[in-house]
Length: 234
Image (tube, rainbow, N blue to C red):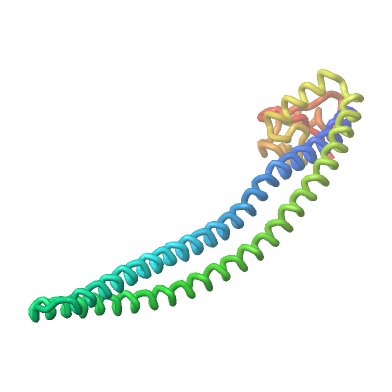
């Protein structure tokens, strides 16, 4: 194998590592956002539980106001009943008192029901808080681990990029430019093995006997007849 092809193979190995590291680094923010989404879901569940509890509390307050209003009305009617001297008016006031008293009983029953619902809401809130706390712990741990992984990969990437710079220095500029073009175009398949059956390991198309012989002899740079990859044999 030609020395410059060996150099390109070594460079390609480094470039592929860099490409992989860059892809992994690009995924880490997405994974962190995904972790935060799980936290958002629990936060939303807690917010909804609190909202339901508050709405229930407002309903209880409104019933208490209604009960108070009706009791005041009952007291007023009782006073009017005590002061009236007409039997028919006394009877009508009595009917009103009974009606308002029945409404108070119904409202008190509904208030008790809402108080029971309030207990359920408090239990739901407590459960949502516990879930959020656990999720928060898991998410914080995951985000910290992902950040640590990102820092390590950035350090490794920096080392590989420095190594790539050193490897590029010993390669002919024109050959390097051709390699770069192929690497970008072929998604990393720039320098590829051609098998004993003359099959290019990149495009899997059989090269001509002349191309295979050129790659085997190392007399000159051999390119795949189909995809243009730089070829070497083993």
